[in-house]
Image (tube, rainbow, N blue to C red; front, side, top):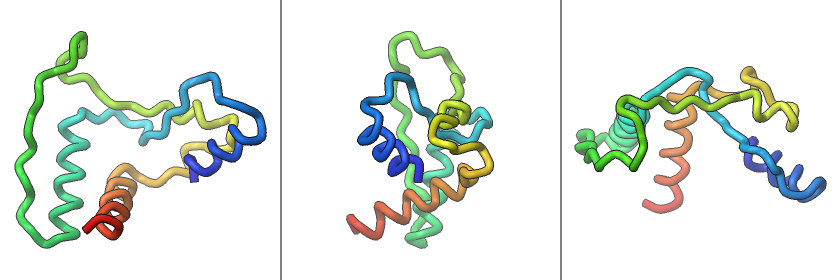
Length: 103
């Protein structure tokens, strides 16, 4: 819904000039999100989880940095935290969407 609402808003009002974030509102590391994707893929396929490959840190990225979507950036669309699904459910839905279209 967020993507569609943002596209409709942009069509009606022009390009959004500020950052729009969608997230759980709870801090997660990149590794934790990768593990959620790993689990969702394994649950969907019935296969053993694939190994997570750790890549070098991006220049300037602090160790153990967290991903934290600021839900307040969606207020201009009338979307609040109660309109979002939990991270686990969102990851599972996303994995399922890609799986059903590309596998």
